[in-house]
Image (cartoon, rainbow, N blue to C red; front, side, top):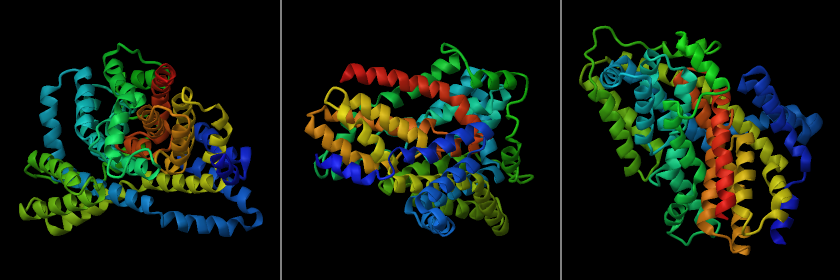
Length: 460
């Protein structure tokens, strides 16, 4: 079969391609810091590929990674969002918003549901959700003795999962385009094909709907999350080891005597959502335009002077340096895994078991595992979807069901991986480390994944 031949040629390292990613997972859990683990995995992969030429190859890979269009997009978007949040803090508009929300929130459950609903409302992009909601809700959830890990779990569960199941998002545009490219949708009908798979996107549906059950106690706390909530109940919402993140958040302070305007928070956010839709879901353009308009408004209203405004923009960008460094290291690992042929190797192993009945189950299980291990929620699907599409057409499988299984796998990777973009950004925004967030969230993510697997087994 042509696909099998392509897979064979691509996966030249075979089972050895698993080594760097396994090394990353072991080190990350061991030392509870992702960046050292990611660099160790990347270095191991470079040595496997280049031997004595590894130093030069590593330097070349670092430069190549910095030139990656997707990484550049992430750096600009996250830096811009950090600057925007900085202006919200400096002008007092974020505090005004928190005071408004706090008036209507009187219980722990109410605080968590307010966070959940705000996350759902910012559906156009998961980065917008992860960065903004954490900054807005930190103090409110602290008031009700909610751990930063629980806050991160609620926000992360409304980031990628919500962006996937509401088709007016960057996810829908990206995957809709790929579906056309691989022949799973006719030209011009990529979004419609994407929409046909939404009812079958089991993982995002389960992940989103699980939050109220956890918040209300109907799904009990267990594992690391239970320990985090017990610690927060004693008055320590910020986890030990995350003090440096809290300190970074405090780098920008509200200007003394400022006239707090809630409109300066709400209007820019609405503008950001509106411009994202106006620019055909190109979130970078919307971020740049919103940041520029907000800075102009702050200057025109004489809330901050020129120097203060631009100092705040720079300080806000700087708060994103640590998560961006982790994402950079994750992209280096992705580069290594691509050279080793990890994705194609695993697909090659499972291809003989793929039939019309087993394909949805295997696609979610295998691709979800790869996305979780590598942190590549979009990149690896560019490689995998042509193969999945060919198998789906050859076996006469249910195409909307396959689309649902594929997007479920990608969402699981974004939601659960210890060093995925959304995990890192959500943790930074909420004030805990990415490993603290990931380890407390994992039991719930794995439960949602197990229920999804069972669902795909019955739906096939």
